[in-house]
Image (cartoon, rainbow, N blue to C red; front, top):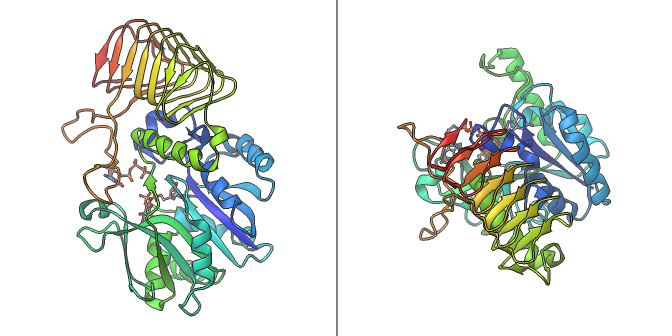
Length: 418
Ligand code: GDD
Ligand code: GTP
């Protein structure tokens, strides 16, 4: 059988995502109507022989329990479990800490997926490539994709032998250009990887080489495994041209929403909204409990959460509206994320700037800009309205971020409302 690990880190990470993760833990943020990592779980559950999916992170158990229960109901072919790290153990420390749990049932291999990515995951192809490898005793298969030269510096960079696909070089976030093949944060490991981690662990304890800022038990796939695979010649590279992106910023959820909706149009058309009495454009997801006035126009690329109410004549495109939010009549929402239980009045306009990758550059990825520029100005981004916010009638909110529980009194643009 096979297993999988999804790495989700915890509440102190992902500061660029913060305006959104104040409402919902980042891995559970709904994209195309499903919590972000449900897309991982769905892709994994379709892999032959997949038995168990272990979610690893340091969010408290109670924040993950309901989700995990729900996943076990929805995907009967696999068991889903959350394993809480007592503190941040890095990308490999948790895997080593829970090694007995991962190896119980003797899986032949296991996937590891970063939780903060979105993709048309080529998992069948990857496991087939791992199992039929030309490389003797392959221990690691890494998923790679092409980025632009300048963007590659923000990722792990991989060099492969073009014929054998053996991994010849790996550098995490290099200072200067190495390769435009980047690490997607998706791996297949053979069980022998635990010997590598055990050796690394012993070595660190003996030499006490842990930096003061890190837990003694912490280890990293990027630092402790991948370059070692290069040294011993047991890593290989699987390249993909499928859609793939990181989810680091609020803007990336709008981009991910669009692509996951497009995948649904092919694989699960029944999930998309097909109301006969409402006008929709392109791909739209509407939770069955939401109520949308027949004269409202939705789309393209809109996801509407549970119990949302949308008034007459309202126009929404390229946006995500979270649960229990209501939007009045004749309002316009474009390139925006609206948090839970927010109330928007009538004739209100909420608009942001898309953060899409440069369409004129082949292989360009999204730029995950921080909230503020060097000069301390808010970078243009999708507009984010936190949960429990009241936006009155007839105001305009442009390129702004509004933190939860605010009562807006007038129009503004390019501001962060704390
Ligand atoms: N369980 C757990 N514990 N997960 C963690 C921890 C931890 O202590 N620290 C990070 N993670 C998870 C994050 O949630 C994320 O899914 C993944 O591990 C990697 O996160 P980062 O360490 O922030 O790395 P990164 O996203 O900047 O870069 C990684 O991903 C890129 C692709 O998105 C690297 O693997 C790069 O090489 C790669 O290109
Ligand atoms: P994570 O989202 O967990 O990585 O935490 P963070 O949002 O606090 O960012 P991190 O500590 O990884 O990086 C700090 C800063 O480095 C960010 O605000 C960016 O300016 C820059 N940075 C890091 N990774 C990337 C990336 O992938 N792309 C771009 N454009 N900048 C990055």
